Length: 459
Image (cartoon, rainbow, N blue to C red; front, side, top):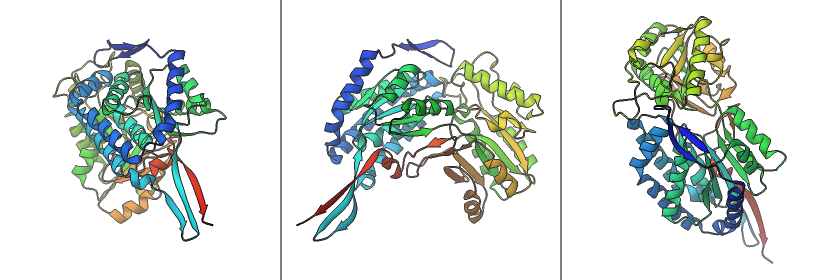
């Protein structure tokens, strides 16, 4: 049985049976049979059905938001943001599907019609995470369906209701049966599905170790995978920044969703001339948070997803402090006893360095390391000194400098005066151990299709 433990009180929130071997076989068989029909459905019709799917999903927002809060602990006051993100991304992809999937003409004259068409891959297996369960899955599901692929969704065992809500919306919208299906799977069964010859592409969001297991399960098969893995995203606060704006946004980027964001801020490098003022302001802003039961509207900082995650975060912080780091945040400001539950007080560590695991490995919690730097060269070196490369940000009033600096930073996305954000019109990708592949933008469709060239000569 799949058991979802709510981080609110560590009680069992729901249980579901894992799919049996026969159920998995049936889903794979049905998807394989349906992919030709769905491929031959016109893009106009696919867009209409996917639009109805999105509208159906959004119409059930109140139920979805409360389920989201109970499954992964995000404050109920912030759960509507995920619905808005889902809508923004889905509608962008629907509106731009024609442009993304149009044929590419090489030659068109009296003798030749030469062009490239973008054919669907077949069946896409989507493995979605719990931290942004709808905002991550929409990046994969919607363009896959628009491109003419069938989709099998396996959601995290922490958020199985998210898969069920998406299935319910697709059925209500009239998407043909078996074009979009879900499975509740354990790790062994997940690997078996990946290795099945009827799976044509895998999209996975999760840990680096999980991405390695996906690659192992694919083995010698000639299929692709999109892997969005870990992050340790840095920010550089330059002396010429809008100081108040930088502090407010970096505090939010560090602690939103209890720091459980792949592109959340985990490292901040501050120019030495403003370092002391930055630390003081960051401390003041952080201590305004209300860490409490996420079902209460006044709460703006909830628990982390599970007890094991909370303990790992505490251990990483404790190890850093034992090696000389200092937490500038007064934990007595947060009234919950956060020693044997999922409620982790926000922290910000100074006197940190890159010999500490805290500054090198993903923490995925409400904490951040802040270091003083002498100049932009030192900031560049430290920002690039990481196994990960999802996003990075600079806080400055000089746009030309930001562009020049950003070209030297090894990440998939570079921000100026913003962080922890995703624009559906930009490619979402990473370098190094952050993974491979692209979602979103018109480029994201290219990874869900294969090029087929037509060379037609008139005789």
